[in-house]
Image (cartoon, rainbow, N blue to C red):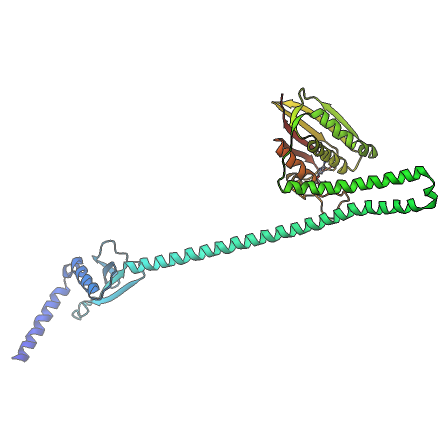
Length: 370
Ligand code: ADP
């Protein structure tokens, strides 16, 4: 009986299988059923993840799949279902399950990693840039330092040598009895001494400015008078160079609030440069005019001029267009930095217009007072 039952069972099973396998897949199993099975299975194995699924027939997605199922996703787990169809009906159903949070987790960790590596790359680039610019800055400073020392020694060496020579000469018995020559050597020593003193003053002045100890006392001054004073200072050097200064004082009012000695120094520095940076006899034109309560002062020369790059930087401390021994005009690159600092303190603006080989014009705008 048992044997007969088994045979009957087999026949019935085969008949059912035959019938069901001829049905389309969506009539054999529903989305809800698979969802339910999967949810139960996930719960059983403690997998806390959202999922999506799809049933495939010969690798083609059938109607049975969860909503929004992405069949292109790569993280798919698959298992064969209905794997024992009658031989004449060859079906090859596969259930593919995709764990959503796993993908999200992978994306999140990849995103985190790439963000981190981006941040580190940025840090490396910034550090590299900072150290490179620091290195360039250091190199510039050391070059400026050696230029400064060279210039200073040069400017002290000449007066010291001259004073030595003059002192030796004064000891000479022939000269000892000639009062006019004693007087001449005496004057020479005094002049060289004055030059050294002026150099020391220059350096001290700029270091004082550096410490921001700028507390200038100001009084009402007449620009034309201050200008005449500054011109007077450089008149001897101008004569030596066979140059001349032309003035056209057109400002109808020239009173401003200023510190007499510092303001005169500024003008002398600019006039000095106009003479220093001229290869031919210097021709300097000084003009003033009154425009909207501001006195516009321009100092133009016919000197060597300067490049656009230099024009932007001449008011920086220690900046010189030619450094080292490229040209024989000596200086420290402090004159215009000092001028700018003093003019800033006077609420004045200064700028330059220049063309190489033609000349330069310095323009200063000074607030006029009544
Ligand atoms: P220094 O004359 O001691 O070098 P300054 O601060 O006075 O320093 O000038 C800075 C630089 O500006 C000079 O080295 C020079 O290259 C340029 N410069 C200033 N005045 C003139 C000018 N009138 N003509 C051409 N170049 C000038």
